[in-house]
Length: 105
Image (cartoon, rainbow, N blue to C red; front, side, top):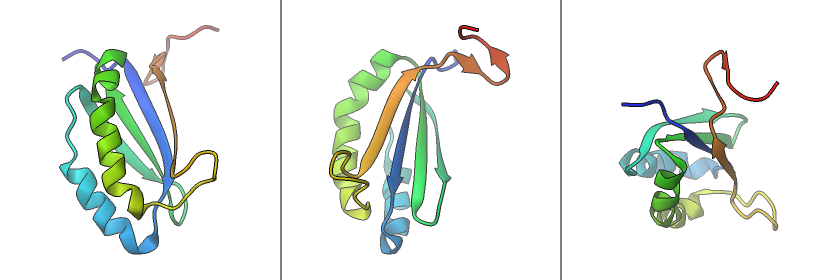
């Protein structure tokens, strides 16, 4: 298997009474091309999801399934803002892996 080349990061907050339900739904979520995933708890109700993908194309192909999953767990989440809704998501090419510097100086 080659190293992942693309990643997505999603910031979100969970309703305290829905944490267990969210993680149960997350355990069942499988997406082709998603090589690894991590969820960090960044505050009392705040979390950050990091997904590593085989490629940008793999993430784009998985987007409809990811949106369907979001619809499944949306009720477990708090609204971040009127502009963002329940998630703040970004994605991009991995330009550094571990301690190796790969990007521009």
